[in-house]
Image 1 (tube, chains in turn purple, blue):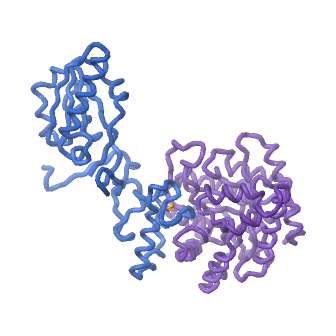
Image 2 (spheres, rainbow over the protein chains, first blue to last red):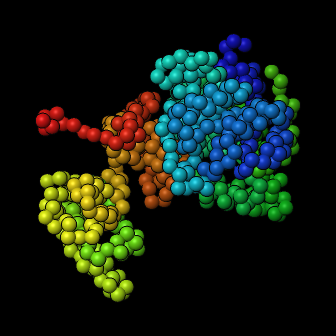
Image 3 (cartoon, rainbow over the protein chains, first blue to last red):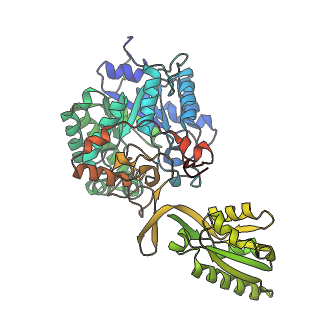
Length: 310
Length: 222
Ligand code: SF4
């Protein structure tokens, strides 16, 4: 077991060769712990780890660090997200050390949505280091036991370090190289942006496999089930870096309104089936946004239960 | 050059309405080039303040002048003989101007008439864009002369982020994703490997983060 980087459940599941299944849960827009733990309860036992988002969409919320700690308390393993928008390197280092001290063992390094999208559009944006440099910094802290200035860390934080990849942003032909850069920087696992355009994702994964990147890093395919055609339309129009094929919107519109959620879930389940077989894909990251109560059903129908205990 | 925009007239009025004798000082440097604080703009501002003053029933007494550069004490000195004749001075230079004036004339009151925005240039008639962040350590040789520190909304050194679409930045439809441009240029030149270099965290001390900066040219500074 000593060759484990953090010994997190997610790491062990992936290392043992199981098809991983991670979830996502946003901290509350307030100090309402009950609301958050209620959402978390639907994920418990149904995912290997749950991403705790960090002021997602640049809307200020309960801190991802505090919420990750609450998740541990609730019996879930958090994947603590950290964006480069809100913290300089000092704040990052102290939160990384604090995260380890609180029992957090996974961390996801992100640039962060631009603050102008959120509820503090007037805010200063930090971007002292970028996500690539954050990956390097935290893995260096873990593996070499040193701070940026080379000073020793008194008990280095052991975190399993993840990064995001969006195969649907432009330029498409460069996305695989950016992924490669993240792996070279030290990423242990990757969670992709929500996938809807399967054809493009297949093409992307083919490049990943051809370059052998899947052997250096675990790649989890991102899935967000559509609740209805309206959500699909909205995401197509307003969410940066999202690619929603018209065929999917048509498919959702093709059924009655009341049946659209089921149709969205069916599409997601078809995706999971394909990912299970797709070369280079090590698991699925299920982002059922504000639909946490559906996760048990989705996990069950996707054949993801019971989750392996390692 | 330094690019600035006019302050809204109401804002300027709120600053100087109470003063009866006002001097408006333009600058022949950058603000003349970007049409915001040169000879023409000085007169336009004077006229606007006069119209307002007349409406209010007490038109102020306003003089104007345009000096070579407000960021140069040699030219700032040219104000010395008459400066005490005014209740207030409006500077139409970039943010440097009012400060040089204020430091040279501690007894006088100075107000800015423009919002100083960025280092850039005109990309079309009447349109200026930012190009440099003045971070003090130029690294654009890694990016074919294009600066992601100034031009990427997230100052990424390893872009483009997941929001880049069709060459446009996620933050604004008006803004090019500079990372898209950098990547495409590297691909076109067959030098994509250049972008596989992991950039070290930057030393921001040479930027504003290290405190106000100073530049000393030994050969010139006795
Ligand atoms: S879209 Fe391009 S320019 Fe805009 S933040 Fe992302 S990488 Fe930077």
